[in-house]
Length: 362
Ligand SMILES: NC(=O)c1ccc[n+]([C@@H]2O[C@H](COP(=O)([O-])OP(=O)(O)OC[C@H]3O[C@@H](n4cnc5c(N)ncnc54)[C@H](O)[C@@H]3O)[C@@H](O)[C@H]2O)c1
Ligand SMILES: [Zn+2]
Image: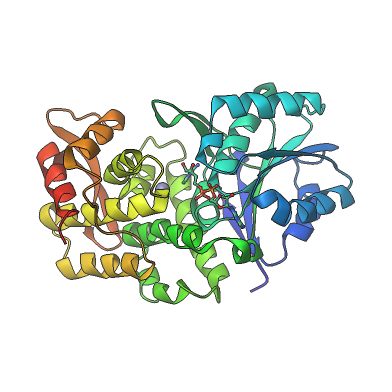
């Protein structure tokens, strides 16, 4: 496969996701072909790890297509998803003379995409932006769907805006420079997609553990799942988009309790395991189907057990910060079977405490 395009179909906000090899060198041409990115000036926002690896190729391609490119590098890591960084980036956009006729390109993982996308959403009340994802998480999840934002000390993603990109350009060659731990972490989201919408995808997923062979088709399949869900429920109002939170309610509690020691996908792996346990107990998910997913998480060396650094209470306190229990129960995504997810309203605090407790079992 050389290049595939998937359309995220959102009426006048529709956009293409292009997936293929050697796309960084074509970004200028692709941008020229889009209606909203034909101005003269562009800001390329990237992070300190990705800049030395890929910024020169992307800049050269944009310049060749006639753009004046202003490079903005933010420190790598989740800490850059902050209002301080938003202010700094927006001031640079202003200083470089960008206006509504210009655009922002986000080159990097979900951190850069969320931050630069949010800056594009609010600078001059919104200017166009391009997503150029370079991690598994950003390719299959964060670059598609228009959620942008930053964190507060009180919690993740508490500030943000819906701002759909003009296009997503996913060059899978970028994955060759991605560290193994970040690569494998991304499979938590892929496994999640399979569990909620596409059980067939799970069958031969393990082969990607150590090989990029055929990864383009896998990414396209995942973008298709995300795009379909976003089309059905762009602003998370009907409940469909909420299905993407499978594994994330408990996972976020664990991520927050781990204070930086676990990557997002690693915490979500534990959250998925607990959500599978709840699905078996409360929604009739066959144990063998739950085990198939757990085996896959293990294949990607994702964590499935909590140690004594954590406690059930600590995780529940964190969880209750971003999810409020009403009459002792919360909305929680469960599976009736692999590929068949729904939002349950009767998962109780006790149910969750029991499953989190199981995560400590040897
Ligand atoms: N907006 C959404 O819908 C959405 C969905 C899922 C996750 N997110 C957000 O995404 C973020 C996580 O994204 P992530 O997992 O991509 O993390 P990340 O952006 O921190 O990237 C992971 C690490 O890999 C480095 N890196 C990125 N691409 C590289 C490459 N090609 N080669 C070498 N190094 C590279 C980065 O510098 C970083 O150190 C979180 O902030 C999360 O909240 C948002
Ligand atoms: Zn996630």
